Image 1 (cartoon, helix red, strand yellow):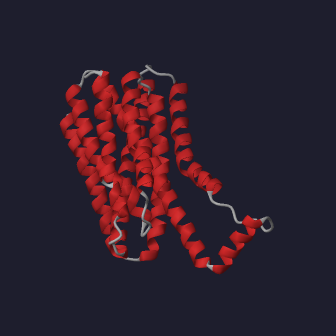
Image 2: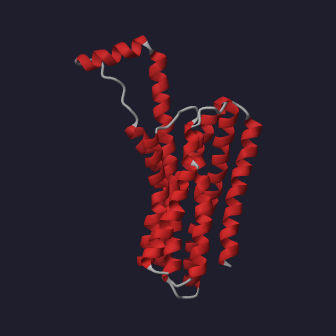
Image 3: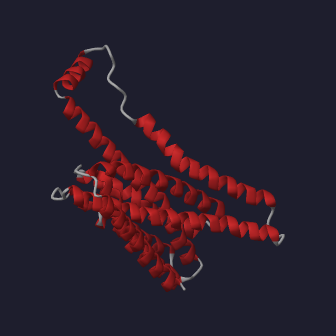
Length: 285
């Protein structure tokens, strides 16, 4: 498979994420349907978390076995363990710190006409200000999910590129088809937690590029470069980020109730993730 074919098919696999994103603009969904969609997204994310962390641990395990066979140094194993821990911390605690930094500051106590206008708006309609803040937070959470999925999809793109470069055309093709199906469900994972917030088409476009674009970029990098530490770092960051996002979505959906339905949809989302992964594994085997 040529380099040009690889990047075209890598783009196809990544941008199927746009198939699920427009659901976020539907305004006919009640609270029950929104909980179902959001918790289905949590199930998909839970599977992705298991998937990326198991792949990362496999890299560390392989290095450990190589060390036991005197084919690898202990310092290399320690370096991989450090990458795993540091990447996970960056993806989880790091995201929380970044969100705190970008959170809008409170209006200044004294100032010019702009300050007076802000204070007047706040005093006149505090509910509108609160709703606007909630809307902005929901959209930030959606983009955070897209970024976490994007890191995961970069690793998927690496797998496509490496397989294509090695001449495993059948495996690369199956990976592309499987990841395309998987990415289509990830679009629901991004918009599910938005609740009753209707995203703009521009926001959907940005979220799709953040979530799906890395598959395309990963296929390019994977075709040109093979690096276990790089791959491990992306797995670790993705795992930490996904765990952080799951907690955010779970907390956000608690206020709607429908606990039993939510847990059932988590199971359904996890099952969909498992099935799409089995398609890739079966075809690749």
